[in-house]
Length: 324
Image 1 (cartoon, helix red, strand yellow):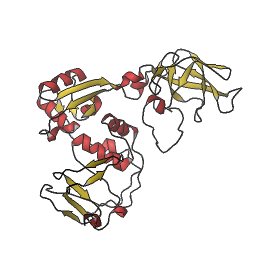
Image 2: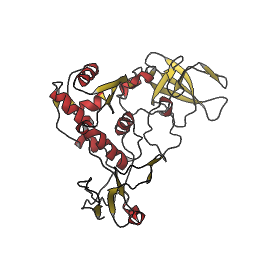
Image 3: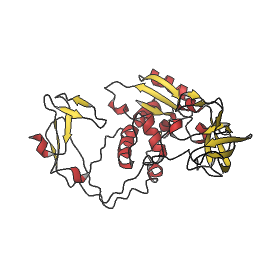
Image 4: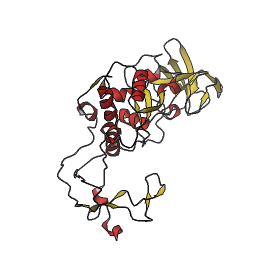
């Protein structure tokens, strides 16, 4: 299980360092396999401001930018379509490490113009795009209040240690960040906070739900291993992309962000340990069945991988005809 220090502090009011938290986790029975600073790969990236943009004299699609890095003005050649004067950007100086290429930047002469650095895109920094549907979003456009020369990791809140811990199967209550926070609070490492999602989910203003009645699809439980299954129907939903903070947390947990509805369910699973899933009502025929897997049955996962099902596991099936 993976989670960040700031994510833990959403649930635990503590003044203890990440190292102290890791030591306590080991003491109370959770093996900390790794404690890493995700900002390490961004160590050479700083915030800068584009002061001026001119056309490249020898290339129609390139720009020559005057960029202030907090100390000096640099001349940088940039081919991004979204660059503009006054833009706050992510800058790597010559000699600095670029995560996307896993190499250090060399000074370059591009079509006769010397470039003294590189303005980076999210992809070049191995960070999620704010809108994954855009094929070429260009360089990172930092719209928050930042200062030229400030480390990018600090400006974006990415200077955040990440814990990787091993949890034994008998501790299902701790397969979530809140569960871990609860045990740490019991160990004297802080105070467990009240759950409050109002601030987080206020950012989903584009997800409109006009009705939330009980499930309009019959739910049939065919196995004693499933004690209950709860469903609800959300009507007139307009989906959107989840905010960047949620995408980052899912990436930390090893999940690929998809869209707001899917990301919310995945986030809540890791955050408070509540398994959830969203289904398209138009794709469900007749009933939802929860049953035991059959001998020799195979399951195709979302990533295309096919796995064999043990008869001991439960399956959910949304197409009644497939049961026959």
